[in-house]
Picture (tube, helix red, strand yellow):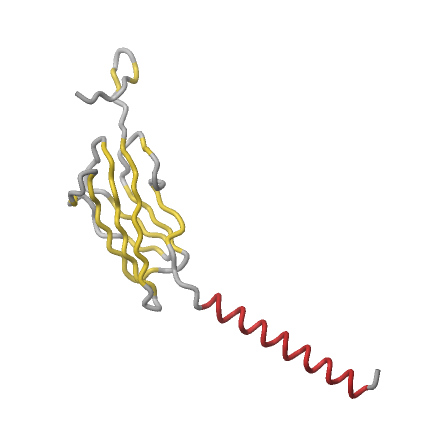
Length: 141
């Protein structure tokens, strides 16, 4: 192989490598934020009222708005202001939730202006304790 051809191949390979690397960095740097985890877990039943609703995003939100609804779709005034800590958001509940189904709607805005809207549903099913005999099932009379 001639030195000129070898130089040409090295140059083309280098350009392709640098171009591919730049594209990879660009796409990952501009990926949109998403909700990646929540507690209570979506669709799950918890046996005690949560004190905090926890969210984790793939990026750092700059603002988060949360609304809590009961199983009949009535909005509950039971959430405090969200506390942002990097990619994590904690939403303290003002008081305990009684047994029932709940829906949390989430609207978060990332630094690049991308809006993430999501909802999680969970159920609270507290098992009442009888001091003499131990746990008893919740009744629905």
